[in-house]
Image (cartoon, rainbow, N blue to C red):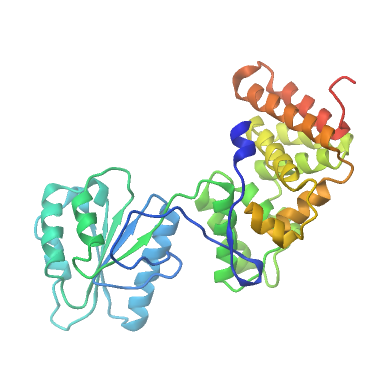
Length: 359
């Protein structure tokens, strides 16, 4: 429970209120670092980090830029773990008609000795008209010498970091960025519902964003997200939490049973309560403006406004009791009890009635 309550939403902002990514700093680099949403070509491009969705977008963006500049672009793919000596030089060398070349090299974190040697040599004599993309997930230290050489500026390269998207705040930023890049607006409640619906799979989350962008015109509302993805388990978790916090005991129990019947996991159900209660506790008692409080707490304006609305009818004592009940339920659904369903029902009862269980 402590981990669930401690996991806050910390984001920067785009102009107009959209969230902008705030990532942990990549390894120190002497070369220019480029956001994965705004890739560009260079003689050597290091696409680093574990997040495959972002890496694929970056590499695809480089290909599109090069192809738009010259449709005759030649594209070659190399697996660094199963490398045949001489391949890199062959595919990057100028062709008879001088077409630009894009060489995409995957599996650098599993590279063979032959590839490592030739790649290091290539950095010292890059081919004109060739763009070599090195994909390293960071899953191992293999290829470290090559990465260090690229980051030191050898080969005139750039780096596109693709750090892991793990926290809810990272997912909020990701979704906001998807719609920002498409020039579209998504309501804060819709953004939260969409993130909740695909909390465990960034690939599906990205696909859901693109589906909404391509299928619909105008702003994306919570009702639209619910119509498309309302059956997702995590969305049900926030529905249960919202209903219980609003004091609608019967509706909260009904939502809980429907969610469990559809296969909802008790752990994210409790996590939804934890996220809501933590936000309420953070803003309780403050008279600052939403923007000032959001800036001070590292939250978004809409999160502050929603938490303040959720606090209606709550006191310091009842909120503290709910937090304690959530802590107990968190431990029980993670193994401290043989009956996680009962633990959830007790949590819903305490939160919805704002009274001790059995009172």
